[in-house]
Amino acid sequence: MEKKSKFYLIFEHKSGLDKFVLLQILSYMVVTREANLKQNKDLIPIIPIIFYQGKEKWNMSNEFSDQFKSIESDL
Image (tube, rainbow, N blue to C red; front, side, top):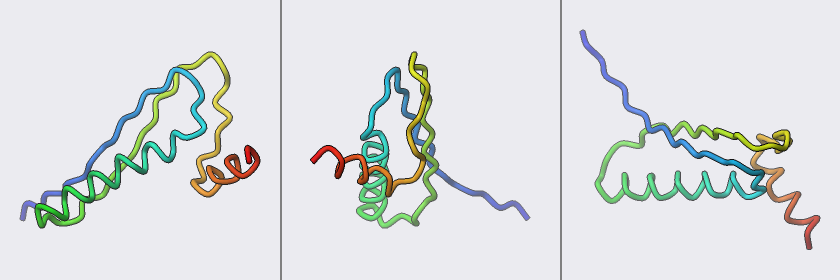
């Protein structure tokens, strides 16, 4: 029995640190979900991948909730 699976890959390349990259990735995911819903398609898993090639060390958190901590400190 042959079984097929589908998933989306979202690739984002950054050459510099961007404290809003997680919000950017989330917006891509939302647009993809909305398109699926409009086409009455099944919800397909989305795997986001960020490629970073900046001079500075990547020191950003992978936790989405930390995205808002940095915004609070800027206020």
